[in-house]
Amino acid sequence: MIKWRARILYKVVSECVKNVSILLKKHFLAIFCLETEIIEKVVAKKNKVAKIPPHIADYR
Image 1 (cartoon, rainbow, N blue to C red):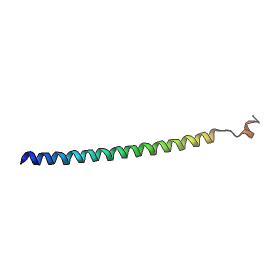
Image 2: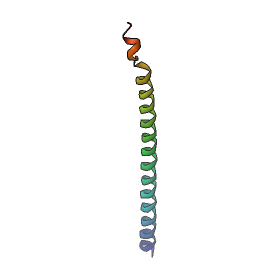
Image 3: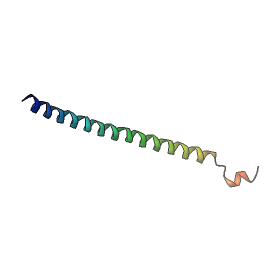
Image 4: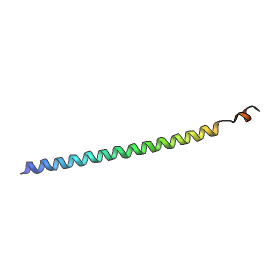
């Protein structure tokens, strides 16, 4: 009787741990993707600002 309950409890706990780990992976992946997207936008804005238009560069 105790082994049977222990086996069920083990299965339930292991399933919960697996689900939590999957949720954490998805959460951190989403954060990483969001940070990457923000960095790409910042770099794009920097590159856009740093470029000198050709008609201005000719006068230098």
